Image 1 (cartoon, rainbow, N blue to C red):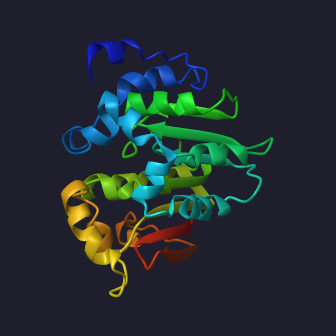
Image 2 (tube, helix red, strand yellow):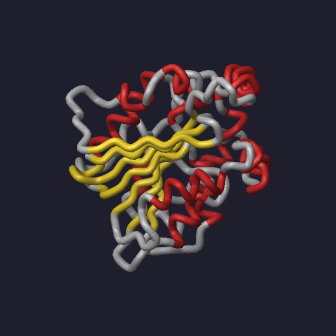
Length: 248
């Protein structure tokens, strides 16, 4: 992070609550993110390159809107709940989520990268129902059970297993009993899906942690002792993507 970028971090941004001021100084960017994904999320050119709806859709082989809506439909047409989105997302995922907020709905969005926070703030109109905070997904600064729904959209595949375990444990912790945790991410495609063979070199080269999601189930990484009341899994595009909904 260069000095100019750090100097531009303003805790009084229109979408950041007063408590965000402390969050800006308490969440260092993880080593794996700096070493592996600097080009996609941290470099000043990253946002200019990847914040294009058509490109995000292309990266997901035309499935972005389908996967976005699959996740959001779990929240309902009108959302009057306390929702946590773990990590900013390129594309219009958050805008569509915000458009569904009812009068009682509240959205917290967290991300560990200041450039991603500023990018999301630029995409959203000022809204007292939305708070964007700098926090690490593996060490969230929320109370236990503080959210009704937690959404983790294409984040787990970017994290090494030790971080992924902590992120899932934190998502479980901050979601109230009876609430939902919604994961959307990669999944092992069926054998006859040609993208199964296209994606192996892509993921192993650019997404070195993603193949974990081909080899195991997200439920395998739930914290010890966690007993879900209900688990629903649905796959898309010949099994390449999955939506997993866990009710606590």
